[in-house]
Image (tube, rainbow, N blue to C red):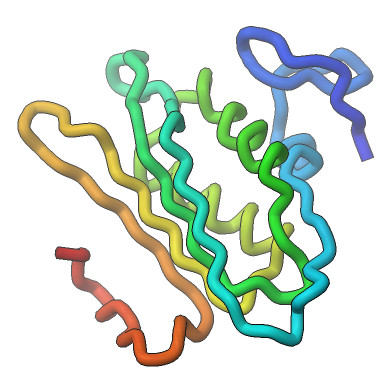
Length: 153
């Protein structure tokens, strides 16, 4: 495991002083704590209001609101690590859909929730409102699953 030595304006560097993070180092940022109530079914909802990344076309920052909803299994996401993980996107050139799917894969791999729903809301640009979602697992009781292949209203 590569340890993190410091945060620079362009991201995290590992203790070997290598270039900004790759996937392996990012996973080291996102951490969990034990879920002492793993036999209970409850919903965790975290809203990240200050998520930013760079538009690959213009290199101008895009601003997002990310809502993470999940039914935890044996682990809960540690909130400071969630914030630090979100900060890893700040200087990255990445499209909305790629950001959501990468975040989803990392969160699902590290936290291992029974159900996960991510909603990425892009600040309105050019009069266009963009919302990207992804879901896996069995959702809350009484909630109808999102239709496949359709956007949220």
